[in-house]
Image 1 (cartoon, helix red, strand yellow):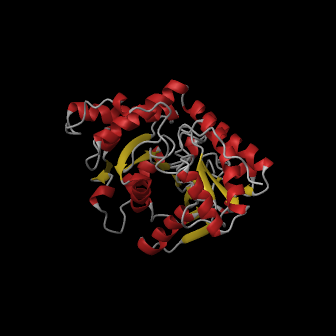
Image 2 (cartoon, rainbow, N blue to C red):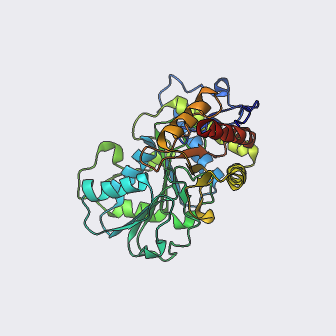
Image 3 (cartoon, rainbow, N blue to C red):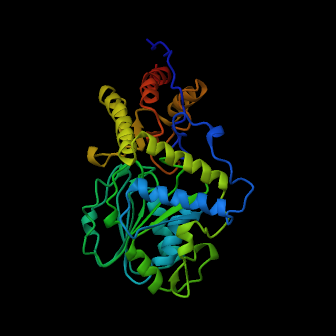
Length: 374
């Protein structure tokens, strides 16, 4: 017997893992648009860029000496810039357990053609043996596997006495998970993830150790202009004060500032983290009560609280019908698993998603499952 269709719907059905839902109460008319039509090099433009840089560092409580810069091409551009700029002097350990990390490995071995590269990998749902990371080597890893729903539990695998650099893709982790900044020499993210900002821009966070590498190492390969962070062996400090390499969208900057203001208004990064963890708890409760759905992450302590990936007891045709029912009823958009990941669902639980919306969604998941299996 089919379940009765639920009545209550999520107020915001946007559960995509990128671009992610806008913050609660978002209103584009509330953005400060005074920079639109102005040069990003004007005083008003530079002040707006400097403010989002300063606010990012303040809200994240970055250590003294860490620098924040805005770069082109989202998190992908930020990661490529860092790999092309920093790698070469030391062997590289590449840790990955999903498609994006695998992509960084492919770029390092096939594009940069580095030879002394150690592949530390695991299948979807698992975390590799991070004890294999050699502190003498540079280490590249994703903090949270956006397409697998598996995150590192903490930074304990990173040596405080390391000689190499840690380069961390944290695009679906920053502002949603505690970050041990002292152990991260390079961190990249895009504000289109946890903060629901507009796309096309990336953020790089550099430790003093990373700056030292940039100023002492000259890559052996040609460097595209948009990747160049130094001139004459010195860091281009202007990049970390708002003098971006290429022209940024000032509308996107205003949108990001709005998101940062919201984080401050709810109590800062700890409140943002707690909000995401509470969202995950809604799904955990649901999965416990329903044997047809499970987390792709095999261990609870490595389960992502942002990009929550789920396996379901449905064949491909049933899964397509399941997702279509939710879309057609406007209760959940864009929740299918990533194209390269095992089939299933991926529901974003970052801080811009309201717990009440996830609670409203859960009965619809049951209804859709019953509808395609009975």
